[in-house]
Amino acid sequence: MTPSHWYNIVPDLPAPPPPPLHPGTMRPVGPDDLAPLFPAELIAQEVSGDRFVEIPQEVLDVYRLWRPTPLMRARRLEKALGTPARIYYKYEGVSPAGSHKPNTAVPQAYYNARQGVRRLTTETGAGQWGSALAFACAQYDLECEVWMVRASYDQKPYRRSLMRLYGATVHASPSSVTSAGSKVLAEEPGSPGSLGIAISEAVEVAGASDDTRYALGSVLNHVLMHQTVIGEEALEQLPEMPDVVIGCTGGGSNFAGLVFPFLREKLAGRISPVLRAVEPEACPSFTRGVYAYDFGDTAGFTPLLKMHTLGHDFVPDPIHAGGLRYHGMSPLLSHMYELGMFEAVATSQKECFQAGVRFARAEGIVPAPEPTHALAETIAEALRCRESGQEKVILTALCGHGHFDLAAYDRFLGGEMEDFSLPEERISAALSTLPVIRTPSP
Ligand SMILES: *Cc1c(COP(=O)(O)O)cnc(C)c1O
Image 1 (cartoon, rainbow, N blue to C red):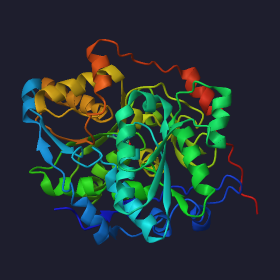
Image 2: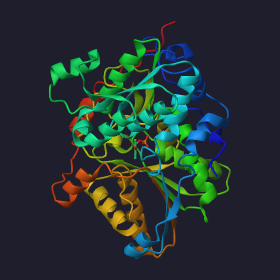
Image 3: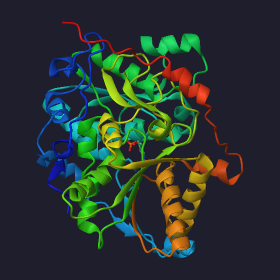
Image 4: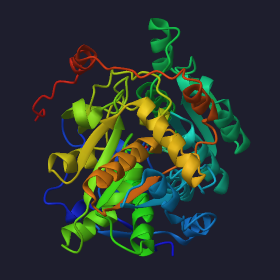
């Protein structure tokens, strides 16, 4: 059954996460600061202290198009690996956009439409968020304008087509239609773009217009909360409780969506799974970033967020997992990582594609490049079980399909894929421009 409520983990934490700060005053941002960007209901959810928030009927009506999503046991993968581990995956690729992103795109579009907003702007990396929001806007008669990171715009023309088919307008980012984009283009005409730059462009346009708001596909508390439908369903569907839960992290929303309900049960002492986030070696915000206040975007338009970050100037190498190319990480997850509530590891691009191919050959589903990170770690865990003879139960988030990513698989199968090593100097250079946090003005 699709759950009737989203789960908000914040009131169950031992301490609340540090608040976002206004970069001018260095004081916590209030609802008024956010009102030009987000509708009132989402701002309320962002700071809500309620453990459960009811899902509106109009949202459930749209969720019904693909929810509940399947929870599958990967028996054929287990057999291929010769592991005594039992592997389960929660598959979000059955949604209209082919990923978990519509779980939050739909309520975000709904609350905006209810408040009388006419147009939403957003950024997209791999194109998954852009297509999810374009679909959601079509449900509630909203216009949708998307800035798509240049590297993906060129690599994934069919994601562009899908957004247009749903009715959205798509720009390659950096674009010349915003001042943030023009500035980057002036400095680097061939810039591959980044999520940070694309966010600056979408925020700039939303902030300049009364009937327009901005929508973010990850990172923020309300986004993570909307995704908890994944974990709530999995809790109900699983025939046995997991020993290990594994998910990939870009901004953290699919990982949080799967693990938060399990963490609630863990905090209540009913289960005790190990929870593990997996990120790309090319963009390792948990494992090599710092926990500090930083901007969410490149131009510095957003509030300062306390998060694991590689610096807002960091432009990750153009790996195929576009959804994981973000310099920062959800502030809520960053806070929980500092509290030791879950683990994080990083994997290389080739190891991930190897896992994606293995999974596809055994289970039939072609995974998106992002969840191949979770699959690589799932396979590594299952192989450790083979060595030790442990019969662990592993649960992983297969958060999207890779039907739009076949060119990347072709490159891997043709032996043309590269791994990017990330020298420490590049991280320290980007971290040198972290904003200086002053004491608040009186
Ligand atoms: C966007 C996306 C991601 C990364 O975002 P998270 O917020 O970390 O989930 C991962 N996988 C897929 C399929 C995506 O579309």
